[in-house]
Image (cartoon, rainbow, N blue to C red):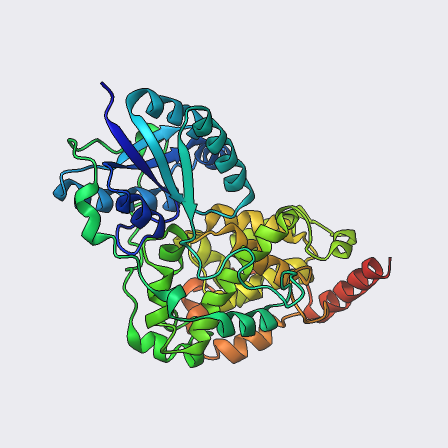
Length: 440
């Protein structure tokens, strides 16, 4: 006889504490099977994107490590994570054969692929008499929770952030007390987590940022966050991306210490809201007229940008940091993105895709929003003629060249390339091309 259970499906929420969907699942009182799916729809794209050569994907390794931590906690409770590798629909068909499932619980995911996947899984479960419940967990406010007085979604950050703060109260920040219901996890022997090699990956040997935040960094965030040579940022983005830390706890505790830091968390909500209401931004400019821009798309210049060989030290330092570590300082992300889109007139989608391949903390909504902000095509009140000057950015944010020299040690040697484009000429060209496109 098949055991009667409920299932909690871990996705972007790899923690047991203060997990909204997990709380509601445990609170049902039925034996709960913790599930994770290494989704081949996603992983096969990663393998294909590297041509099958680069098997060291930092994100897959991070997820695998987070699952091992979950497994250690669950085994102590007499339970286990049921981690499987495959296509979600096929795996749920297997689960229906193995268990008598009454309900499946999960947390919301707002990306277009995830919405489509969840719709298909919901239909499959419904055919089998199983109810699918999902909850808000990875953001403070979602969908229509922060909207304009006329009922329409915000498309500019500043008024959105004002409304966000006006709506916020303790209700939205309170934690979910999952621990007192841990006895409801389904009791069974530990199951083996699929190895990286069985999924065509291998360890990169990375040391990931700790999930604990430092109070002094948060308190000094306003004055130090733009200086790439010092540890002035929280480095929590990867933990927020995969849910190994609670956004509610972070907003309540760290956000109370520094409003600038809280604003960065609001940006996360804002971009998730934009993707939810305007899913076309994944492929197209938020402002449709920007799709008329005639990009140069010079492949040699794009390759030089990817490799950190543009002759602009702050740009090259950022790209080398990204290629080496899977991370890039946020101020430098803006500089390198602006350089690609406006100095080189390479389609922002090329840069977005490169970041998507390399960033440890890759998040579709934030990545897309950041790139469209840099290109001028997104949710930004500033005009298109904002073009970062890499030399002035260097002078302002890395005046002693400490960050640059770390990643571009050959800076003053003959081997370092000359700038592939003159700043003033590139700026003039960009303004002309943008102006022509927008006039149409």
